[in-house]
Length: 459
Image 1 (cartoon, rainbow, N blue to C red):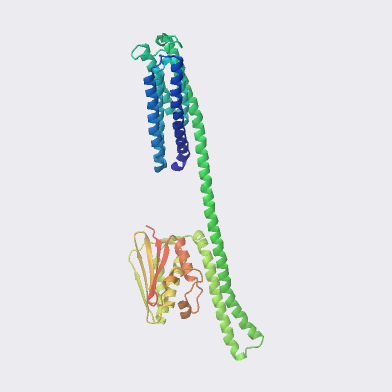
Image 2 (tube, rainbow, N blue to C red):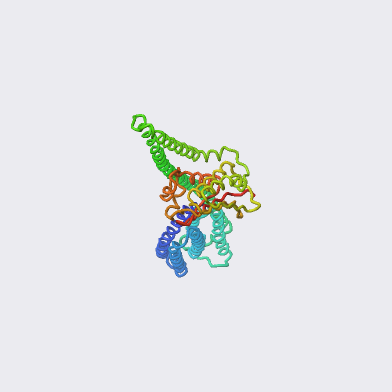
């Protein structure tokens, strides 16, 4: 935010600095021409060597500032801005000293060009803050008034402009005071009013920059939201197509079975078998619809149902006997390992039950007789960790990234177990993530799989 807001100020300051450098070349040329003309009008009056020397000194430091200013592009915004401020302060300070020296060698109080101090105050007010403008007004006043006082007291020589002004006026106290007061008040008023105007303009510029940044941020947010909505719409369309496909095939099969019976193509002795097939397909449809409803309700149930501290290990223990019996009926070894002193997690018991049921049922389903299913619960510093490991068919690396997608089942899984909706792992993933956890799989084809999930523990 700060860097963005400093860019307009830096850009303006940088442009003004280069503009002043260009203007100073014009000032150097004008000063030399003025010296020549003044010497022609007032011959043998002006000290040409000091005047030309000061003018050449202006050209030298202007060249140095030009080189330094052109090398600022290699710095970042903040560094460039700081260095630009340094150039501005250096320019103004050297210009005020140079102007004072030129006035001193060109008549001092007798020279009407002392009002050029006012131009410097306007420039200072444009480039710098009000405080800096007032300081430079004070510096200009000290330089000019100090020069007048030193000349009036004879501490430094006074160069009279004979034939142009009265030669004694520079030493008259009243005249010195009036000129000094008039110039000092003009400088301070100019610095104050000019800096006030610039402060308002800079405040407006800052407001515009902030408003523009807010608009750009909102535009970016809208773009991100639009991208998310587009992605969500594409996912919804894809999901609808998948659901339609999954529902259509079994319904079409049931319809075909019943039509064969109604049209008299199935003899009475085979009707029982056809009806059993239809009932099995209808049961699969009910399971699929139940899973679809559960998948859609998980987010809503997590938000509306009353969550409570749940012991993941206790939920597992309540299911372990039933699941052990199911595994043993298939000829599998079933092991449960629970670490002591596990903390609770914030969830609903039904959701934790669904996680265990889906993961363990899959492990049993896709492990051949004689295999092993091991279930464990432990903890790390921030999470309760659940693992379900089997010695089943395994999952290939290219399928591991899709295993949690809706309706996805590997060919090996379909070959081993025809029945399945392909929604179980999707339900598990959504449950785990809705409570701030994550789930992943490690697997090798033919050697088994290990599903690991974490849930934030309540300390």
